[in-house]
Image (cartoon, rainbow over all chains, first blue to last red; front, side, top):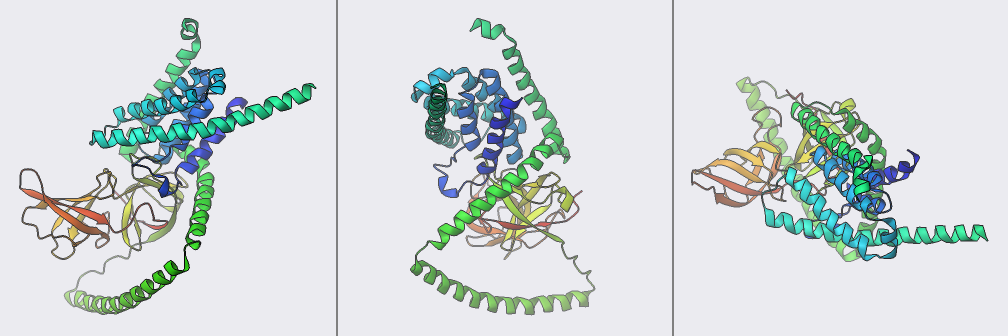
Length: 164
Length: 274
């Protein structure tokens, strides 16, 4: 249970930030989904089941702060967490293109699942927003990836120093 | 891969999805019955301090950005505000006179004095966390008397309506949200309709008869019909009038008097909602 404490705390903090993003961050009707990016970045370093569990929590937090469609948020985020967890950590650390593509693709898939349960009238406008949001997630995940890799490298250096 | 599929992990994943589906059903039932949903209440109680902190930091950053604006812009704004104060002072004096006259006439006609609304001050601590819904969280909840259905206003007019409340916070849907509907009328001609969000920045005034007297620039206010939202709150100004398909009705596009993304301090009208 302890291994989930930090990811869950990060998801709660991301949830608080999500509702206080400045308006200038909105790009073509899409705003960055901090909760989703935190979920994908963390799930990429975990196993599929752990990713699904973190996804379940992320969906609960995001659905709760929105107030509508709690179940759709939970299901779409659980699927995203599970799929992101299926990408191995090895692949993730060695190739930055993988998490970037994963984030974009998973955001698109997650929003598609969400919109299946909550259909919107203007399909073209919705598609534009979803594409912009996927692009946003990719860029933010790249930043999160570099940050996580920096932490990982520092951890390895410390470990090596301790051995010496 | 097959080994993975055979393991209990996929079963656990499927179980999580099933729990998600059950949550969806239970949450929708609670929402439509206006009942609290305990798992959501628990998350909201945990989230409140974090949201308050994030909102405080966001306000500080905005204030810092504002103070960095050029001197010329501040001088220009100051001049504009001075002329606005003069105009509003004159308007207030005129309105005071008209209010006194209305009071005298009402008393003369033996009308019952309208009950003064009880307002609860609140602060928005989270706003529009998703593109698909126009919602916000305020820092007052059930313990403060906030209930689903109660209107939320600012000094500029109607902002939205409470649709869920936890012990310490409440969720508000904005006028632009497609689930928000308010009985409205044209201030000048008293033509009535329903103001309805379109999930875009601009809500619409619908169900107007084809001969309703409405034109660009008209101010739309709440009509008070239904007894939930008080009468006379500004909703917005007409930017476009258009015929509905079929030709029996027309509708109008409004620019809301309150910008949902800029509201910070709000008031909840503590009316008992049936």
